[in-house]
Length: 177
Image (cartoon, rainbow, N blue to C red; front, side, top):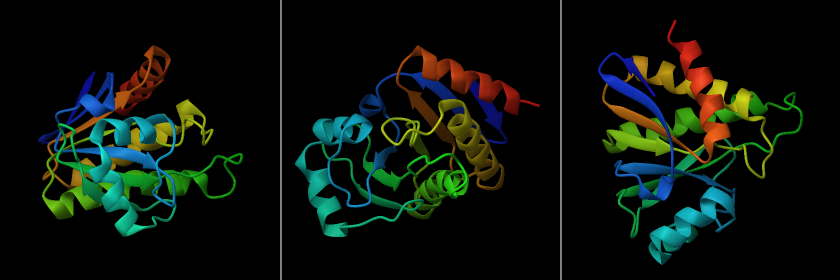
């Protein structure tokens, strides 16, 4: 499913983020940039030790921010690591921090001349963010960024499983108006 935003495309697919042919993929990292589970573990396994070696050099990434490393053995040339908030009910700044993850990742891509990137659903795994609320924040933030930044031509959300895809599809449909 796709949404055209000026010259850019915002799309959602169900699939494996480690197999994307975008210039960069985004990793749902932890603040210490150490290999974790879920998306983070899958990206590090598929990309090999070069990603973690660079991440160790960087050392730290605060929640809501983003850093970049090589893509190692991945098809993507780069991995943008962002740290999503742990969901604590939504009244502790989680929506703002989650939006910041997407915005800072996109800013980093723009700064580096990256024209295409793929996102997972940040913070909706072990960090417990409710999927529908996270999808709304993610898609709205990316849409707003693309409206002002035509240098990024493709943003793809790669969702794990049909239930996640359906939630994102419903949210994307709501942004068409």
